[in-house]
Length: 501
Image 1 (cartoon, rainbow, N blue to C red):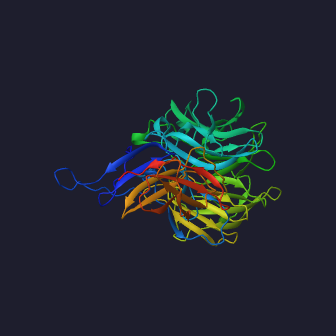
Image 2: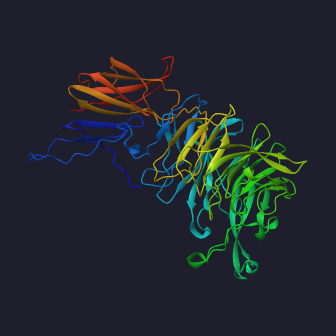
Image 3: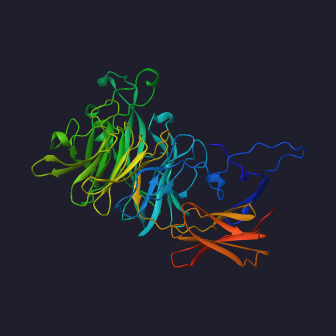
């Protein structure tokens, strides 16, 4: 990802002034021809004139417009392709609401979502690198917690010298965090035809007190789950030196009784774990299921095992991974009868295009009983009504992907000022206004005048997306913008900037 100069090149010899973050660092570009009379090459205008640094955001395409949807924003984490990478929040029309670029090209942000911490809404995501010595799909990084003004509250790191894996991060009501660590350990793999001095990837749950960093609980898959439960082959060929990822944990959470529920992709199994002793209470699916699983409820290479409000459980059933088991991926809901020791099919959610996602994915219940699916490797997201009807569908660029996708209500109040871009055209001043992360803006007002303290000319218009354009007749010497809520209250004001012609 290359850096971009904060310079706008307008058409027809326009002088363009861009101010981002309320007056910090504006730049002027005169696009008239060179003094020799030759015409300078013209660059395409940026997608967002007020924030040209965000013009390389991935486009979000809505293929099924929202109908009867639950309120909320869509949370994505684009992490491939040629566009910018980082936590991305968009509205139901696919327009950006908030974005934060990752700090460098080697870093990705994963699993961007809303949670509660100390009874307040927060944003969380994982930040780090994926791959390296751990093999494909294994992360080394830390978790970020940010408040409603997008300030970092803290970063949560694994205990000791370990690095936190990206697959999940759950803040509990007690102010603790549950997440995974992928720990390579020496292991005799001769029982599988591997070397006696082999290396095994152990799936390790850590529960950390967020405030103090103290480790409260730790669980090791290798102490409770045998290698004979895995469907994953030993690494061979050029990958033979990598640890054997027999378990591949990819979700962790709390059940209604306070015990831990997890998903292991490579054993095709969802587990319930005693939060005190670490003992496995039961297994669903795989080679050693504690229950009889009916055919329609069987899953493979799955992600995102969760308990739903009506007592059922759900997974994102990839249906494909090292092997292909199903023709398409799905959101799967099933009932567990612990007394009868049975698992029965309840409902499935399929994509109209019959998507098959070999990696990644998420499946979550919405407040009204609907569901929201992020299709992982297939960069789509879909909202369903409780009966399975599609009520919103869309995707990021097809050369991109988002590990998970969520939908949730969010109120953001950024601490910086609105941004604006100013240019002259046909004897008027065109003003582009935006405010990254502000969710309550309903209208924009542009004000112009002869001095920064005398901006008596004004126009207003409804907000039209991440960036809104307003036209001030004539050529005022200074311009500022006000962000207004639905009642007309001023939420934020930019600095007054000069208009240069």
